[in-house]
Every structure is written in C-alpha cells, then in structure tokens.
Image (cartoon, rainbow, N blue to C red; front, side):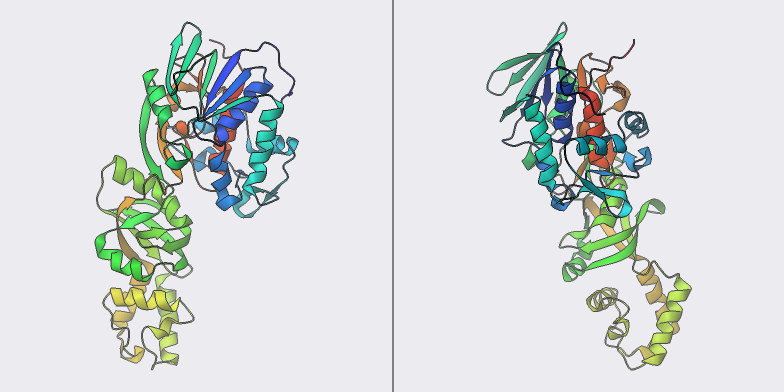
Length: 424
C-alpha cells in the first residue's frame, strides 16, 4: 500500500469529489501514482467524519476485518478489495505518516494519542506534501463525459476537466457535514444502479405504548442480551450495552440490531417489529428462578421492588415491574410461584414494540448505494464508464461499528486512486 511519493510522471488530471476519509486517501493514492489531483469539498473543512469517529478518538480500523463484518447486497465484494489493501496495509500506511497506533478490546485500532485530530493531521500533511490542490466550498452540480475526458461543473459555473474522476461523496448520514447523497445522482446519471439507501447503526424508536416506560428509564444503561424479531422470525441478536432514551432504545447492542430492523421497516415495509431484552443473559430461566426464590426466602418482608436491589438496578427493576402491572409494594412472601415464574419470563424476554430507526441526523452509517456488481474491485472503477471510480460509503457496502467502516474507506479509497489498469 505504501507507494513512492515521487512517482510524479505524466500529470494526468484526477478530480476527487468529497473530502471525507475515502476521498482524502484516494487523493493521496492518486497523487503518489503521478496524477495531478484536485480534491473538491463542498464544506469549508476536510475530514469532519474522521474527527467525530470513535467518540473523538477515531477507531481507524480493526485487527479482525472480514467480509462477514460488512453488509450490502453483495458483501463478499469486500473480500476482493481487502485482499489488495488490508488492515495491515492500512496500519503500515499510517505508521509511515508518523501516526502511532494501539489495539484495544475487540480488535479496535486507535491512534495512541486518543485524538482523532492526529489521524486527520497526518493525512492533511501528506496532501500538502504531495501538492494536492484542495478546493473548499466547491459543490459539484454536474459531471459529464465527452470522449476520454470528464467535465465537472461547480455550483458557481466553473468547469473542470479530468481524465479520471473519483466519487467519494459519502452516504446520507451526518448531512450537516455535507453527506447529502449527491453521489447517488451522479452515478445514476451515468447508468449505475443504486441500491435503496436507508439509515443504520442508530437508536430505535418504540411505539407510543412504551414511551411512558422509556421516559421513566431515560439515561439508564444496562448490559443485556437483545434480539430483534419480525413476528416469529428472528432478525438479529447481540449482547452488549443498551441505553434507555426519551425516544426508545440506543447504545451499541441496539445499533448493531438496527441494520436488520431498518431493512425490515424501510425496505420490506414490515410493521410488527419488536426488540426483546434479556436483562439476565448470564442465567437460564431455571437458574434465575432459583436465585430469586432463594433471595425471597432469606428476606420475605422485602417489597417486590426492593427485593432486586443488589441484583439489578433499583430504578430499572421497579419501573419494569410496575409497567408490567405488578404491585411493587407487595411483600415477596405473598408472591405466588406462578407470579415468580412470570417475572422470570419478563426479565428474560421483555418486549418493546419498534416503529422506526432514527433518521439520517442520528444514524452513524448509510446502507445501500452504488451497486458493487457494476464496480471492479481491483481499482474501484466503473464497469460502465471507464475512468469513473467510486469509494467509501457511496458504494453499497456498510460495515459494523468498531473500525470496519473506516477500513472500508481506506481500502476502497486507496484502490480508487491507484493507476492499476484492468485487462479487458
């Protein structure tokens, strides 16, 4: 992945549209391969998504990258791309720029400084050293091809010419950062298929019936097992942090479920989606029942609400039981075996009806985009229009949280900028 910075031969013109992570690295790759590169960014800064990623620390990759960490109509496409630019190549690249990294839990890779700015700073320095021309506030309104040349029209009427165009405009999440889906229109005008886009990696909104419950629990965080259901069909399951919010459920475990929930709601138009929460995933029902029975026998005068103190967050237990219709002031000595078993069932499978996944302003990633069937994985070039390349989130590839999406940006972007030729 590390190329010579001085391979400046014939200055063919390359225009990169979009100054996010994939666009920046595509510009670096193209400049290292001898192109005269212009990077167009419609906002006043580059790399805003890099700055906010990983809660400001930039989870830039993962040691356990596999195509199975990705979603889309044809996720195995990722394997071909990653075989050419892997996570190891990426880390070598960043080390060559002076960025030191560290590995944390679940294989997540961060800069050792714990600052996203470190990642962006070394990339910007490289752009400058390679003399990449960066034009800010340069919104592209039209791209046409005549013969072997592309003509790119900007919002101010200025026209640019290039032999190679890289579309790195991102998806539709974080529209305030400039990701408003422009690339889909450009691709479609050139005859490309756009797989329907929808927001993923976001919180989910519960039905009005459950709003009083989540409002009371707002801010409560718990480690739990979660399962997304479409009627009797299991969509997805996970284990991790669940956060109660004013609109419903959020945090990492829920965000991971949101990929399949969003597809079911937005694409399949399903309306009977539920999230089931197991508040005691470490116990089966029999074990949990025995533990509760023992606790109640030792302290029979405790109220139902207080009997779970020391085992479960007090507010969480009392609120869940009260919402389910139990008298939480009742002494546990008076609670029947039938009710005890029902409470066990409740805590092992608490139902929440879901009506939506939070929209583009709150979602982290976009699902859908330019069909990978129309892109060559060797250099991310269009199979329809020679010289036109795509990379990053504009393509129908979306990764799980944990550094996978940024790795896709680095890999696809670097290949898109390369001079690699495809034999016909």
